[in-house]
Image (cartoon, rainbow, N blue to C red; front, side, top):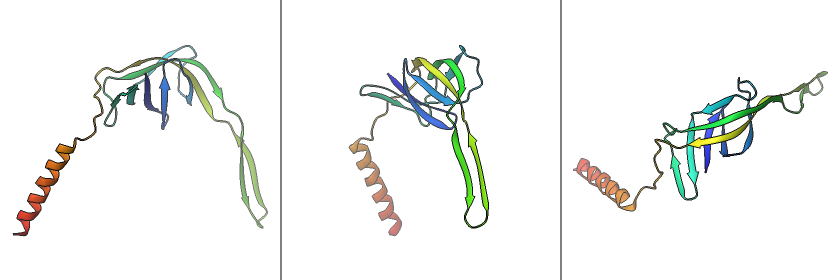
Length: 133
């Protein structure tokens, strides 16, 4: 079973037992955290999609560590202007192990049936013909 959820302005696809790095989350090492903004849950061909989120679903994880990523060079440069500024940046992250995915209260994603699509097209064409008369 896997889930897609949103945290830190990004979306992540995870499964139980995965270790994932997220944007910094204020939590102690060893703490249990829950992500409630679940967008999709799937297992094989059984996929449940939220509109936009699944109500009652959550992804639970254990915080393994807090840290900083590798240094990234930052350069500001304007040619022929004697302007050069150099620096570095290290992004904070939180490493989390996914312990559970709960899928309560979710709906199954179903494509629109052809018969429903035809009836809506017929209804739309009838309305447009009556307006012209």
